Structure formats: structure tokens, C-alpha cells
Image (cartoon, rainbow, N blue to C red; front, side):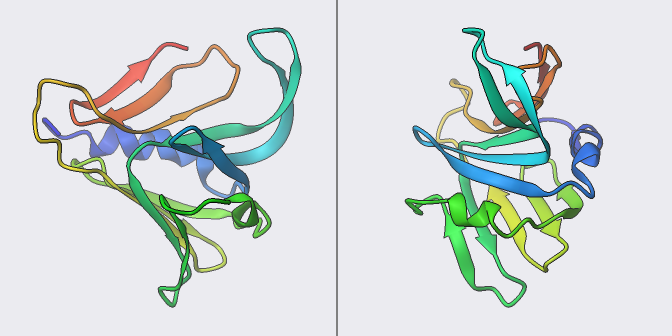
Length: 152
């Protein structure tokens, strides 16, 4: 990942601190995680949907582990809904310039996203994005090209 983007990533993660992760699942090959209060928002078709204040979408390798190292789930898991039942609150988020992301939870668990090294720089490969579902707020997108703020 070019240049130093750690500060931008840490600033984007700051609103997750103290928020619970209450829902998780799959949208195709993207793992999603819902954080914060449950809110009702209108989707692009006008239907009301319950979503989190924030959502993390992960398109790279990831693992959710207990503090003892036991693997609760990863990119090979079929069902992620049990993770939401933990109601674990984010204690802190950390990241580095490679796009690696680590969220530490109050129950001792951690969610770690490990970006995959692309074979070529020609195509952009998204690792993860953090955003507020169905709001017109910028998304932070971390890819092999760096960190970008995308308009909704």
C-alpha cells in the first residue's frame, strides 16, 4: 500500500470504539459485520431495513479468534450469525500501511483482516470498507492502492 495511511485508517475506526458488533453474515463472497445501535434506514428501493450504525465489509482473508487463539470463524465459515450473539464491544482498532486491520473486543476476542498481496498492481483489489449503511456519508475503502474515501 503506498505512502502512510495508518492515521486515516485509525481515524475511520475511532467511531467503532465502545460499540457492539451485533450482526454478521455473507453477501456473496463479502463478509459483513454490523456495529453500534440497530437503526432503521431506507434502502435504495425505499424499503425500511434494520442495519447497524456502521458496517464493515471484508473482501480479504480474515479470522475472528478468542483470546486463547480458538478460531470462531474465518473466510471459510458458512454461518456467521453466532458472532453477533456474542454482543462483543469494540475496545480498540488498529491498522497498518499494508491494510491489515485488527479489532479488539471487550470479551477478549479479536477480528483480524489480512490483506492478500496482489500478483499485479494493475487491478484494484479491495480488502475492506467501513461505512454507515444507507446514509450519504463517505466510505473508507482500503485496497492494494491505498486508503480512499468514497462518496456513497
